[in-house]
Image (cartoon, rainbow, N blue to C red; front, side):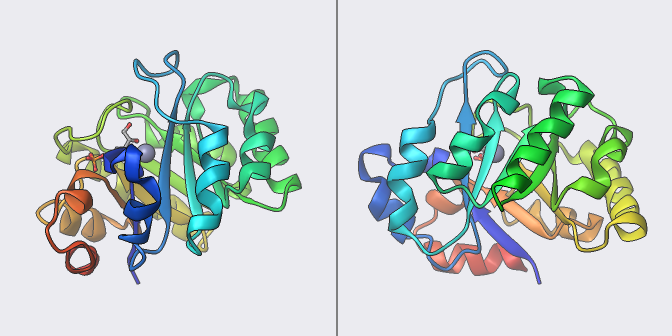
Length: 214
Ligand code: DX5
Ligand code: ZN
């Protein structure tokens, strides 16, 4: 069963509660956190995660695009994140292990994220410590970018690792996912699709969510 995680980066921030209610047919709420250092953009942070937590029953899928996330993961968990993903490029291997450990110590699900230029093999040191692996299909930092179809072999490679080593781990893709590109992701083995623009620009949001599931 394919899960959809709409990115609220594409929502109307002045009407966030309304726009989160509009995606109640989805499986997760994807929250993009950017610090202006790890990526060249600044989005939302801990107080916003805390504020939106009571507005939905869906799990909050919090994607940290921040430098050395180990410094903040516990605060995101306390604010109400259910799944916290950290980029393998944002700290040393040790720092990433420690971030995953701290997320688990808070009773939450932990995941790693790979930027487009990062090879699938970068997931291997962490594969037995995560409940989710997120493969970026755009350069992180902005919504509304073009889907990188050349990431599909990487998704397939990670699907093989997951099936062999940690079969319950979720495989998520993020960036440029729309009704045309979603089937490529699903065919390559992804089971969670993040979609910002494709969900929030749709006239019929529940219909679009169903369409993306395939
Ligand atoms: C990009 C973010 C994505 C983004 C996706 O850095 O991680 O989650 O919001 O937006 P779309 O679906 O519009 O590409
Ligand atoms: Zn994201």
